[in-house]
Amino acid sequence: MISSMTGFGSCEAEVESIGRISVELRCTNHKFLESVFHLPDGMLSLEDKIKKEIEARIRRGRVFCSVNIKGDEAQGIFVNRRLLKNYLRELNGVKNEFKIKDGLTLDSLIRLPGVLSLKENKPQGLHIWERLLPLIKLALAELIKTRAKEGKALAGLLKERNGLLKKDLMVIKQRFAVASKSRLRKIEAEEERLAFLKSADISEELDRLNFHIRNFQQRIAKGGPVGKELDFITQEMQREANTLAAKSFDLIISGCAVQMKSQIEKIREQVQNIE
Image (cartoon, rainbow, N blue to C red; front, side, top):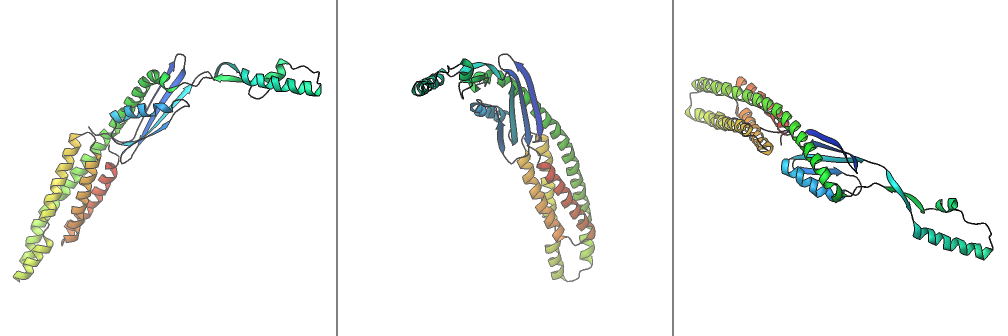
C-alpha cells in the first residue's frame, strides 16, 4: 500500500500532576523528511526523542509537531528572602541616615519588585516524557492512518490514468503499423524510403513507454515509500512521449502523443503527494 505525504493526527489526555496534554501532528509534502516542533518551555530537550519516534514510522514529508499543556498556572507563592534582606538592609540604612521614623510594613515590603511571585507549573522534559510518549504514538498512528487512506485513493487514480496511457499506446502502435505502410507505398526512391524509416520509426519509443507503464504499475502494487521511484518513472515517460510527438508524421499519432503528455503531467502532479 502506498501512502500520501499529507495527513493529520492528534491525541489529548488529562495527566495527573501535570494537566491536560494535547499533541497535534500535521504533515505536508516535502522532498525529504523534516520535523518542525512547537513545544512548551522546559521541553526543548524532548525534540530528539520525538523526532526518533517520527523517523521510525515516516520516510518523507514535513511534519509539524505541536505539544500543549494546560495545567495550573501556579501551585504556590515564592518569597525571594535574599532580595528582601537586601531591601531591608538598604531601607533601614536610609531610615537611620535621614532619621525617618515611619516603620516598614509587610504590605509595603511584598510590593517591592521581585519580592513576591507565583510558582509557575512548568513541566520539565525528562520528567514528562513517560506520560507524553503514549500520546505521541497515538497521534502518530492517526497521522499514518490518514496518510494511508489518502494514499489508497491516490493509488486508484494513478492506476486509472496509467491504464489510459496503456490504451493510448496501443492505439499509437496499431496506427503506426498502418500509417507507415501506407506512407512507404507512396515512396518510390530507396534512399527516400530509408530516410523516412530512420526519421519516423518510433518502435524504440513505444517499447520504452510500454516498459515504463508496466514498471509504474508494478511500483504501485509493491507499495511502501515509492514516491521518488514513481516520480523518476514519470520523468522517463514524459521524455519518451516528447520524442514520440516530435517524430510523428501522422495526425492521429500526434493527437494521441499530445494526449499522453497531458496524462503523464497529471500523473506527475499526483505522484508529488506520495511518500
